[in-house]
Length: 106
Image (cartoon, rainbow, N blue to C red; front, side, top):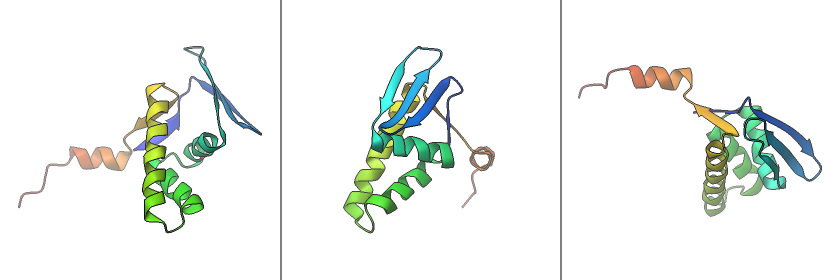
């Protein structure tokens, strides 16, 4: 799944994090440093798995427990941003093509 920032969102990075404004709802949010890092990775990479992997490498190293925790937190954050219509998630072309193919027969 491909992630992108909603066209209705105006955002700006600052020393303390990221400030978001949703032009359609009038909602204003300030993301803390950790959430801002996830936001910036979404903006740069647009892929949930890539974001989780990069954060895991930065903060968990090879610790499997920490990696799992980071993945959970990334998923929760991205889910809340999608629910608030600040981020949008869509199938990539390859995923759409794969779902259109008939299932292979055994």
